[in-house]
Amino acid sequence: MPLLGRMLKNGIRLTNVVQRKRINAFKLQRRVFRKLVRKAQHTAFGEKYKFDELLNAAEFGTDREFYEKYKQYVPIYDYNRIFNEWWSRALEGEKNVTWPGRVKYFALSSGTSEASSKYIPVTKSMSRAIQRTSIRQILTLGRYQNLPSTLYEKGYLMLGGSTNLNAREGHFEGDLSGITASQIPFWFQRFYKPGKEIAQERDWALKLDEITEQAADWDIGYVVGVPAWIQLLMEKIIARYKVKTIHDIWPNLMVFCHGGVSFEPYRKGFEKLLAHPITYIETYLASEGFIAYQSHPNADGMQLVLNNGLFFEFIPFNDRNFTPDGELTANPETLMIDEVEEGKEYALLLSTCSGAWRYLIGDTIRFVSKKRAEIVITGRTKHFLSLCGEHLSVDNMNKAVELVSEEMGLDVREFTVAGVTHDTMFAHHWYIGTDDPVDTNVLRDRIDATLKELNDDYAVERKHALKEITVTALPTATFYRWMESKGKMGGQHKFPRVLKKNLIADWEDFLSKSLGKPVNQ
Image 1 (cartoon, rainbow, N blue to C red):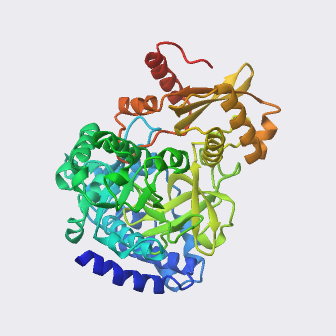
Image 2 (image 1 turned 60 degrees about the vertical axis):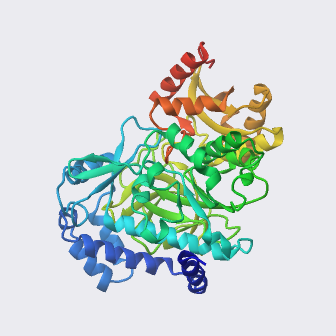
Image 3 (image 1 turned 90 degrees about the vertical axis):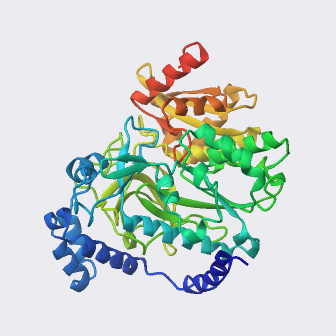
């Protein structure tokens, strides 16, 4: 068996024994906090915010003293604030700003909701942390009884951004997936696909074509990527070789590791491309760090990475802490991991080994198991609809689309929702991406009825201020053409589930030009 196979088999046995121990989330996080502030205490940020005192409190103080002081000394940062005050200096080449040394890599991250890219620092410490967590996740495959040891001899297809990074003054920048792929350990390179040459390709369409042409020569067992792009790739391969399923080309494909968006809207169409079931593993890898991953079969959520360069805080996602537009209020309540409750929604704050401190990442999560520190992603702080108190989360939307598409036999790959005015009241306009024939009136009624069952606030507001629900069905390709027009094809890019403000007008203008007529409200 190859070296990697032997390493993984031995590592799996050791990892499974170690991870049977009960985790003490608070102690793990206190230890991480201590390491982070010790490392950064002599940076400009650490000196301004008294990291020497925080380190002393973490090492010698009472249990919660370090965290109380941390909240007292260090303000909460969103991207604009931390970039303008600190990261812009690192981008210009200054050393020891928020993390020791000079930052060589910056991940460009804008999602689909920002016009300009965000520059997220990726330090050597963060690159190593991401690699460690990636290996840990691979080791968890030993818990899946249906996966044979031969899986570790197969190819690992990682579909991400270009490894041909943009060279700027003193640093490189690009998609995080491209940065991490460019730093793959030497012992893993023989298993890594699409390989160095194709991975450098910046043209997404050309990259998919090149992968498709070589696909028949690879023995792929493990696929990693955003569901939409993996599905598009598999469809291209099936069409190119005139076969029925992807297993006709990759008979040993056993695992799909996905993240970034809920997989459920894609599942129905995705599984049509398979000859037999495969194992799905969910990850939470953001530009700011590898936050969580599914650690065992049939898990309800992903386990937070509590001991590898990330310190977590949680802000209850409620009206006290956030405005209706998703903006943080003054003096919000923040909690450590031992203070959270299952079933409640929280916005994430991160402090990391890339020099993020009390950083509002913009995602919202819910704990499904406090004992295991397992979470699910429920949406974004600004990607929810509450025009009149309906409090509709992306989690609600995903579930409604999943249930209704199953009920109606539809393959819905993409969707988005816009909150609009309706006379003096409000309305929701749904855009559903499907290539199946559909009665939009029936689809509208089923989505509306399902959301009433899932969300009590929505049900109440449908009787009052939320007066209208509209559904427009569009070919799936329409969504991808809009992303292409924004330069957001491939990599970690996803279509936004909620459209707000200027994005609504932008999307409607695009549709008017694409369809040759205005989009009905």
